[in-house]
Image 1 (cartoon, rainbow, N blue to C red):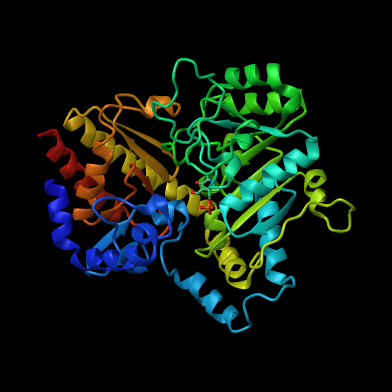
Image 2 (image 1 turned 180 degrees about the vertical axis):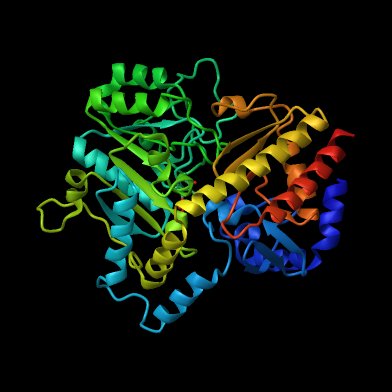
Length: 439
Ligand code: PLP
């Protein structure tokens, strides 16, 4: 209550703009995930690691557009390249050199990507990867993980946040729709396994193996709460995919930021197909999917029966140029630096939690972190559920009131333009919030 009052006092213009916007857009915005109560902020601008809202409040950005802005906002190197390129026109229904240049960078860096194709979002990336897997294997069904988020197309809108919907008659592997509007017929081809439980995947494969085209998994679960894979889990999925002749798809839309070669390089497991997005567009709309060249060959229009994959703005110049610049900035030193800053933030957050003896924990992989109101760091979706989960929203508002921008569900991530001082300031704000909620 107190946090909300303070928030409303500071964000009068955001409130007014929200009221205007909601007359013409349901919920006043175009992203369900970005909504929070009492109303979300309207941002004016971003610069480096900072955001400024329309009321003139300044924030350190620890959300980075849900992991997409790895070099902060309006990075001078990216801006310079984009500004020069825009004068050449932006999209022409023909290839541009920069498209194959960005493709070459991704193929060189990501172990499982021999060939790649671009689209405009991570949602499309997972959709096309699944289409490829189904066409390649000639099978209809997929296995996805409970809590796994892969965008908003029909096949993956299941069991993202199933909550208590599962009753005792519910088969463990049956999907629970996360939204209305998805036909039941789609659910017939989706099987669900808990994350970090290769045994559950094996059980499904033993009974349904002949129907299944792909195992789709985030190597580190992002939206579910930055949940790392337990040792051997990804390797075991690789073994099962090989044993059953199905494709292993890594959704690295978030996790590509964990290593220059993505989580697959970090954990040493190579999938057949990979979906990527976010940081590879340098701040512009993007998605891409790639993998084994024998699978990707399905998209070659010179082949009869080639798979359909188009998009009016696929491979557009702004995205390709910004993406190349973003990749150039993301070298091994940048990854090491993000790792150091991530550890510094985790250490500070954990020490604040201990100091006030709160039932909370932090999960982290590289530059991605999540605060959980659970005694132990969760290993799957079910173990993120806690009677104190509502506190995440309070912490979010309290942090906003102290100039720290994070996700309402407790997710934090870092950008390469942050300094130690930014991390320490965030730790101070977080410690202050922990002290307040412990009272
Ligand atoms: N896959 C993962 C793991 C994601 O985190 C997201 C977005 O957050 C997506 C897919 C969807 O990407 P987009 O929002 O670009 O459609």
